Image 1: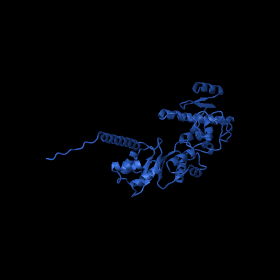
Image 2: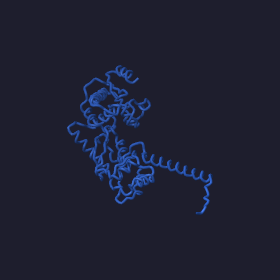
Image 3: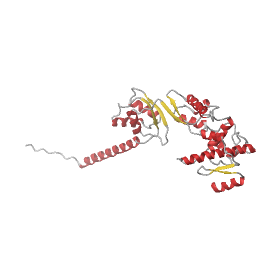
Image 4: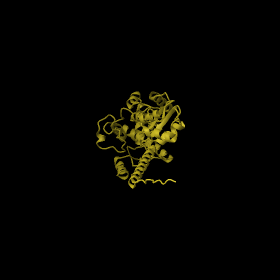
Length: 335
């Protein structure tokens, strides 16, 4: 039996080794905390739908680059590393996807590996009262149009007649096809109404003047709003007949791009053919694209002696026959 002497490690070396291991552990933990935070974090806090096509044979790196270019993810390397950890490198499926910049990397990875492709039809929803500019901005956000200017050029002369509704667009259809669908829909839903340009202009103003400032509108609200639309129409017709300016805040907002219920004194002095505080009669064109209820109100106004109305903070309208009554309503519901 040999008698060997085993040299014990020096305490200083053990301390350095322990510190190194501890530092490595802290760095690794920090990395994974950062990594998984980014994996479950969206690139944007605002919803922005994006149509994206993954071609057959695309590598994980190619898909990651495409996602970053479309601003769906902020860091391509995190997507790649996450796919490797999840064993999803060879599971990405080709197809057309509707993704959102509000999705996390984990959500995007789950969609593209599960092959949750969209149909060949794209749904677009146009809201009542939207101006052509608002429609253009919406289509641009959905990547249906490359720029607002292009849509506005195509829609020139059609403001007021682009009927608000939900439309389906084929994969190869563009904004021009959408405009044709909206115009055809307008003709279909208004064919039994006696319409002219003045009524459409008035309907577009009514659309902006009546509403509710809350997320959920009840059936009772809808019934009250339709009654208000008819009464608002009567106010405007009575003012036109009496030679009074309409004094519609909505027409001033059309000029400024604001959404104020009561416009400022300064904005009410803006020189424009659309400023119905300064110019008597109707503006030269519609200030948006009205829905069928506002169109019907313009065609079938209520009978009344009202010359004034205002909206309180909830959006409810109050009507008056005289300036004295109107001022009382103002003091009661606005001040």
